[in-house]
Amino acid sequence: MSQNPSLQLPPTGNLWRTEELLDLGYGSRTIRSLLDSGALVRLRHGCYIRASLWNAQSPVVRSRQRIFAHAHGTRTTSTGTFLYSHTSAARLRSMFLWNVDDAIHVLQKVRPSNERHGRDVRCHTRPFAEHDADVVRGLRTTSLERTVADCAMMLRYRQALILTDHALRLGADRVALQTMADALDGRRGIRTFRRVLITADPRSESAGETLTRELIHRLRIKPPELQVEVSSRAGRHRLDFAWKEEKVALEFDGKTKYFDYRPTAEVLFEERRREKALAEEGWLFIRVEWEHLFREQEFRNRLLRALAGRPHA
Image 1: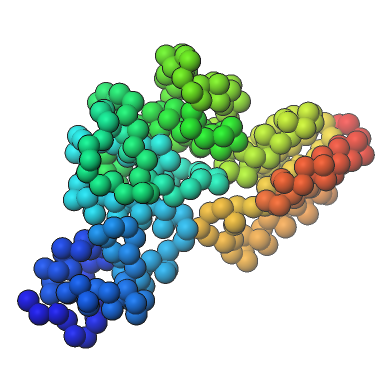
Image 2: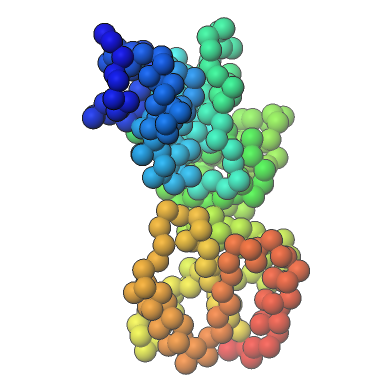
């Protein structure tokens, strides 16, 4: 077929392999022109996406899109030959990740052949059984528990804690995780995995809440209670962190920077209304944002001053 002179992409579909575009009549020069014009984006060798879709996606969604591009570009739904694993499996499950690169991780039973995986792919060769496999978004991935184990042994402690908190909240079996850790004695990363299992808490509702809890613990500040329910004239409320005796509440305010949404004016109004009602009951509120978690001495002094200046209930 001849090249498409109009430089218009197909009206349907958003992800194409090179040969799919060639079959549709787009020659190599036309594909290059579409790339140069900004209508098409190359995600990886031999796989392209409609630019209007790519430009509209958030960083979180783009990271997932790269995995779909790998699956599409290799003409596979990973049926038996490998599983998407580690942080790729976590991304397919929309699990919380913090400061993690976009590398695609695959798990194989044997060392990979000379087939081209690409520079963005990390191949792992630990054994896996069928109970370690699951299907998420149409792709074969490691199970929730195996994903936690693999990530915890690869990531740094705080990164692994964020992911494990979320996995437990999603229903990961803590006993199964401990059994896996017991069977991995001597392997690289096992200390991080075991440490995370001791400190992980499914009550954390965001990456920021996990980092806040970890920082309070590391600074040796009196531990708060998590997700505490209290009452006021405005009804019942739940606090991220609370020191009941001192009536000090700490709320993490960074959700809008981590998730793919922003609070509406109505939500913000209700938050302030709740705070005012609880202040009438004697509660002091401390609001923490992302940047505060990395100014540790300032965070410590601020929190200790608040706790020290409060009468005990």
